Image 1: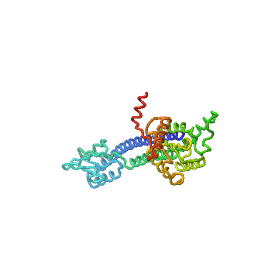
Image 2 (image 1 turned 90 degrees about the vertical axis):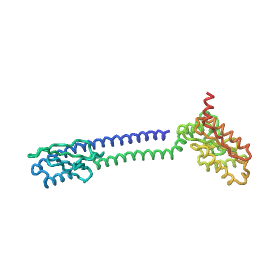
Image 3 (image 1 turned 60 degrees about the horizontal axis):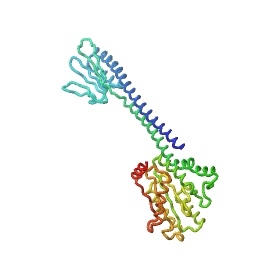
Image 4 (image 1 turned 180 degrees about the horizontal axis):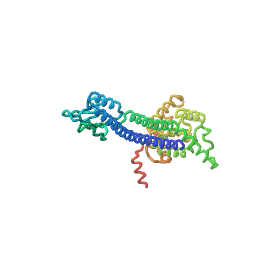
Length: 365
């Protein structure tokens, strides 16, 4: 429960990080464009004043042209200038062919997404000349600043992704052990101790696995946990028909623990049987594990388990249904009964139809 709560908190933090990254990126982008427009206005005013001064000394002479070119190169935001005089129009570009298009010997600015749409135009009052004016086109974006904003925004998003990834990884690795230790393992024991009746302790002295009386409570708890996280769950009942004494039964139980690697999920079942709860596993995975376990028992105990009928296994699973422990135990018990009566198939699985099951529940009201 604590791990799930922590995961929810981390998810909320990740969402906040994503929103912050997008909002700050958008705001900084807007401010960068706005600052770019202000800089273009200021630089154009300065260049227009310089053109007026240089034009008074000699309009469109070599010194005037050089002055305009130098001023344009020094500008951070302006891309091109067009100066109109009595004898025609003249274009100045930072990069030839990038901003000015010539149409019938008349220069026109390109209409590009990367160019600002702001109006940069000013008449030049040069003594002795009429109809002299200057206009310019500016770049809409400060590419260096935009690149910096994008990199820093991406970094924030990657931090959120990394936090989410490692949280999911920790939940995957630790969730099962944490839930088992903190929510489930002590509940049946405590209830038994409080009532003053029934089995004592977590594990039976006879087998060193869980008491049969604990199966229902533990299964209900695991079903609730798996349904909350939309995971599957499988239940296995197995019966060893050739066991002759408790010593042999305890040996088989330890072998079962060794194979399934979860003593907390194993319980006594009947006199010589064992129940196994497999959280998260679906029916196909449980069948595969049962087949491997069956083969392992036949190989480890050839003298006692030389006959195929000496071990019978029945299985069922949650299979996306909302059901309680009693129902799953009933299905698994029926599968085991079928395995004991079938001379050929000693591993039998109860396969449910989720749609038919839900219709059955609705019909019962």
